[in-house]
Image 1 (tube, one colour):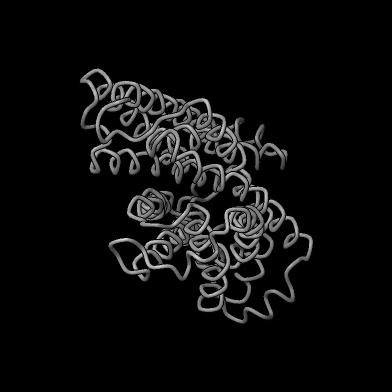
Image 2: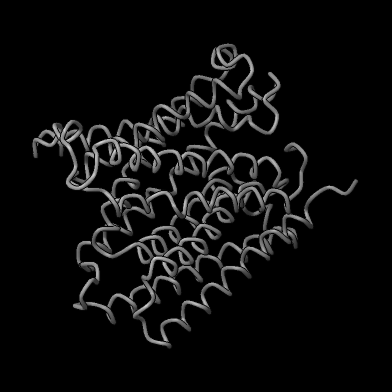
Length: 350
């Protein structure tokens, strides 16, 4: 049984992580004189290569012993699934440039939420058992409601882009390129959930060594390093083809080079912290801990929509479009309520 099983507390920790996730790509808007691959590779080095090792070393007692005892097949599976996720991460970052912040988040995360939540229990053969209980049925209904609500959010985003297309200051919009990238991003992003599920035996070893609620930090060594491998290959290829490696030493127009470094590294920290807190929430979700992925993704969408409103992405939208957005957010909140309630009903009573 997960530590201190408390779905309400778990949902709260997921909300903290989702807030970091909603903000993690915002610094990209303020870069100067850096190509996408220059920025993307540096932030990936922070969140997928360096920080997992740093936080595992800080928070996992006897890390060397844990890694020596952990199953090798779990390490390899987690790494390879993380590398597959890296494809989705790349597509996600590129899609934002073509269809905007809100629409990319809504559609990609909706696909990832449903697939990443239901695939692990389906592949483990436990989905039928989950549905056999009323609490499990409530959780699954919440996942499906959340996925549908995200599509409604995506529809609101699509309306917004159509309404503001061509206006001064409106971001470029290219659905022909952006939407396939979003679908690719959402599908492959679900593999991160599978990567974490594959690494569960490694976390179990860390728990035996006293890692407690921070046991999940050891999993990110393999899932995140796998994602970095894919990113290094793609972004490195782009940098070589475009000859942009020199941008790491080239002053940015109107700002110091250090500011671009700060923005990229800040992105990496925010991305990593979403899963640092994800781990704290996951160990508290109880019997249906697979629903952590859906809770995290749904709250992420709520916060990303709020961030989009704050930065003015919805300012020029019509009243009807804003109403669609409000309805989608209400559905998202309802989905969180269903999933948390189902987990609460399944939690053991003291």
